[in-house]
Length: 302
Ligand code: CP
Image 1: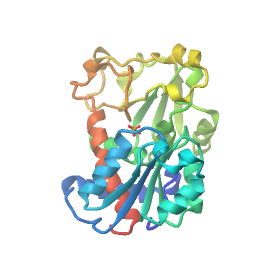
Image 2 (image 1 turned 45 degrees about the horizontal axis):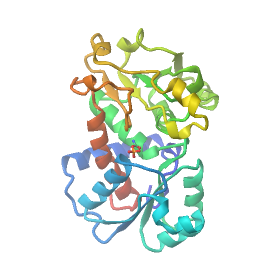
Image 3 (image 1 turned 135 degrees about the horizontal axis):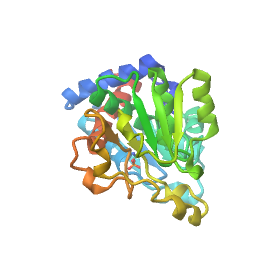
Image 4 (image 1 turned 180 degrees about the horizontal axis):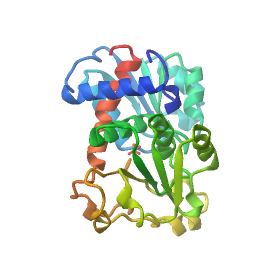
C-alpha cells in the first residue's frame, strides 16, 4: 500500500481492505496520535462535499498533519484554464499526498498517472468512491460483526451512484446476496451485473422493496443525484421514488442497519433518525477513522 494511489476499490486486495479496517479500529480506540507531524496533505475538491472533505481534514488535523487545497475549482487557477495535469504537478510540489474529487470519470486515474505523489480518489463522477467504500465496509463490520454472507439491499440511484458501484465490487470478496432496488431509469448498469455473474455472486432486482426489507442485514439508501441528469424532467420523474419511513422498519431484523453515504434529500424520512437501526451519522463519523487508516498506510507510517 505504501506510496500506492487509491483510485478504485479494485486497487486493494481483500487482505489490504481488511488491513485498513483493522487500522481504522485502532484509530477509533485511539484517535489522538501525532503520526502526521511534518506531513502536508493536499485536498483538491472540484465538486462540492461536506463529509469527504471535512472528514479527511479532521483526520489529518487530529493526527497532527497540515492540510492545504481548495473546496471549489473557481478559487484555483483551473478557472484561468489550467489543465488537471499542470494543477497536479504543481500541487505535488507542495504536498506528500493528494486527495481529489472531480466530476469527470477517470480523472483520478489520470491524475495518478501524472502525479509523483500518491492520489486518493475522493469521487470521480459516477465512477468510484473508494474511501467511502472502506468506511462503509467498516460500518458494516462494526454493526454486523462480520462482512461475510450478508443480505445487502442497495436502494435508489444505482445507475449514477459511485458509492454503490464501489461498495458492490468490494463486497464481492465476502459472499453477499445483493438486492438492487431501483426504478427502470436508474437500474444497476449491465457491466456491474456482468461482473457479479462472472464471480457467481447472487443478486435480485426489484422496483419496490417493502415486501423484501424484512430479510435485509443492511439497507443502503442513496440519493437520486440531480447533478447527474442532463434532462431535469427525467430527474423530476424519479427524485422521490423511494422514501424509507420508520413504520417500514418494524418487522426488520434486530441487527439490521440503515446506511446512507449522505447527503440525503427525501429518501429517508426524519422519523427514522431516532430508530436504533439508523446508522448513517455514525457511518459518517467512521469516515474519520477510516481516512486516518488510508492516509497513514499510503504514507507508510502504519
Ligand atoms: N458521502 C459523501 O461523499 O458525502 P459528501 O458529498 O458530503 O462528501
